[in-house]
Image (cartoon, rainbow, N blue to C red; front, side):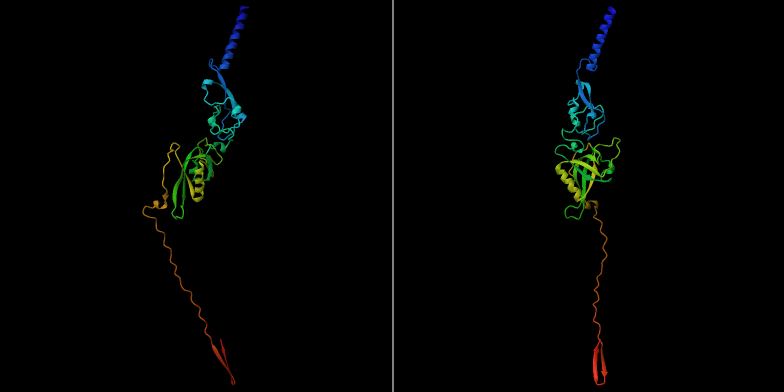
Length: 267
């Protein structure tokens, strides 16, 4: 009987300790909480579904601020920053509610997304990728001037999409696409649209740490030739000669005598 009582007491104590450890997660008496984490890698622009996230238990003292506790709080929201598998789903990585997913969800309030047509030269051989920053250069003839010039239209503009891609290539390789989408203010969007119509656009890639804007004067074509522009080859002179004036043909008179009758005929 003593052995049976000891065995029953031991089982009861073991179960109590196990249950306490299971509830507290092995962290003593610290309370636990259900939080939402990513069930897999979630790319930028994706729309969160029920299968995109899951809930796990974490000690409350280790939770970041703003963490979600229910999947219903994040389902249907767009992702604006990439989320790795097992990572907390936080408000800063999601678009506002009812903002949708994809490119529209990446546009902050008061900003606009404007696309420009590019090629390998304009896009710096594919090194312009989502997340990079560029300056917009335009070359054209201002007003009625016949002298071309290049001016910096916009500075430190964020690139949010290359073609249909909203993220950088994970391997770091270049991304080439015929269209690049830039994030600009409404006023800068008008300047960008006008620059594309009035001249030729060129992108200048910036260092991401270089955010200082500079007042850059336009560069005129004459600045490329310090000693003066090369003289154009003289055009050959064309001599004009007067066309000969046609002269009236000479007339001939023939006199014909028939007996006593005389006739004159002119040719």
